[in-house]
Image (cartoon, rainbow, N blue to C red; front, side, top):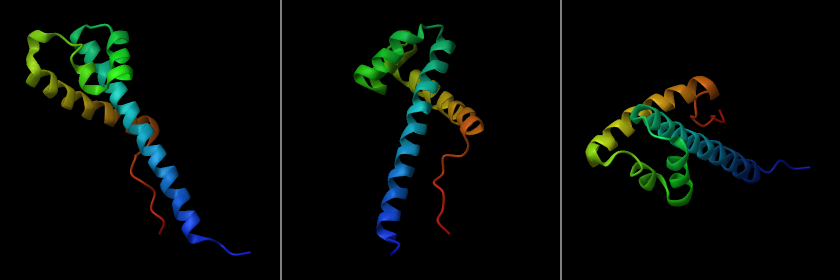
Length: 99
């Protein structure tokens, strides 16, 4: 019986890619929820826009009076906060090293 390094590395790559994609999606959803709370908006339509049309469309669900730059600035600040919260809850998303 031979240990196949290539297959082991492919399996690790699939595992890490899936884990990082899951973390990124959770971070995006958490950011939008935090933004909805900050702007006093309903979360459901914003998350529906995320699912149907993507992150940029979900950002347009927030008050237009703030302007594009303000929404993006708030989004970046809250994304950092969401990432810190998820890191505390789920651990560091950095891929595990082999060595």
